[in-house]
Length: 640
Image (cartoon, rainbow, N blue to C red; front, side, top):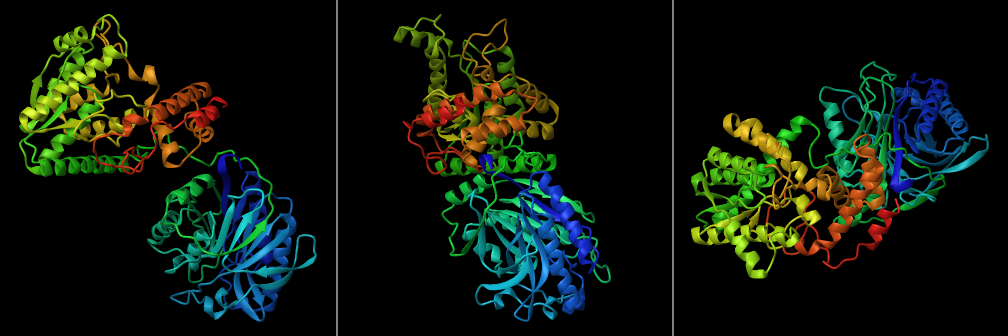
């Protein structure tokens, strides 16, 4: 189980009601198919060895004996599979009948888990035939035959967590259908007892609108329990006398739906679960409680997961669904504007000042400022946009800054800082031809000085433009563009900045859309070195690497606690065909080194609104000493 990934499967076999031999053969067939694809946990529907819709036939001795014979067949035929198989059947215990999940591993029945919440409403009458597993006061034993035909005593258990000896994170609990739909599902206690995966053997009939509710129920349960949830549903082979079953199989992880079957079909769906991520989520959640549960150990050799059923989006900060992207962009801009509006109102600022370079970050800051002023009912002419040309400024960016200010109806002021920087070079004895970091930072700090003093003069506040990606890399001049009175882009990564500006352009139209589109097409640059033939000579991504890679590294390292080897593996998977492994390793090493060495800049960030799950504010989101050593992370990255 390299990097904590494990493949799981939810399977809906084609059944014949009360034909136990046929049903066993179908379960075996799908179990073998799933195991061949690498699944280590294979979940089938409840009562799948008999069919869920047998009605009063459940009271017949013949059917109950047939179910046990079918179980013996499944044990024998799956003995060679390196997987845990969960299958449902009716089981007699001390004269009572229970709706149970059989937990099978390598030809042995490890345990039976009875259903605890039995429906008796509408068309469901399980209480007519079965009793709740809560009726079992203590662990009971049932004699059944294993895969070798030997009679063994198998425990019937509730509230047990199954744990793999060879793979400590591979832990799961079992509940059956209605158990999930009640006010206090057994999965709560199972997850708090250490189960990273909840398996649900279900038979949920299909009604108009029920699929969406079922989907949300599974997804939300996986979120609140920080677990993976594998839901296997009864399919079209069930009786249609009064109900129709659709085989709606679902696999979710921590609130995200990873796999879903097409309804009214049969077969298997797969997902690669990240157990290390789930363990990390629980470590960081002080609200995730603990519970005392029994632990049932089993043995299953570790195996690698091919990640064929795991999707890593290249732009994790940007929704892949275009409709959700539009909704998300509007929400983000609203959060940013609301935060800025509150700060302006609280400080009674007469104006808001921004350095407008004609680049993406300052463009987004101006967009947010315009929205904030609109929220407050203020005249946009109260926004002071300052363009400060110097040695690296090109006609394109300066022209776009001027057009942008005009299109938004804000006040524009131009302050040429070349003479002031030249004087500063003379004061500190710096040669103009020495284009070192001093040459660059002197310009950045001069611009901040101008903005701060203009804000003082106008009775206003400086709005910062720096984004989350720059903060992660430390790609900011300390006490230069690093500083402001309110940083509206502080939790917006560069890849998302682009989509927000694109969203604004799409709804703007006219001249404003044209200038925004040209800004989107302009290379990212601080413009601190002289241009070449009038074109930008200093391209940020040539120096520090592609922002799409750095944002990917940032997301998985901070949000899910991935170590370098796992970030690298995920990046190779996500960017296959875009960047080769050597390029990914190079920039991952750069990211780690810069992330650690530049913490001192993040330790004194100005205020700014948090909009997503990843942020670097030292006041709560990311607390790290400025002199933390990166050797462990770098050693792992360099050894890849």
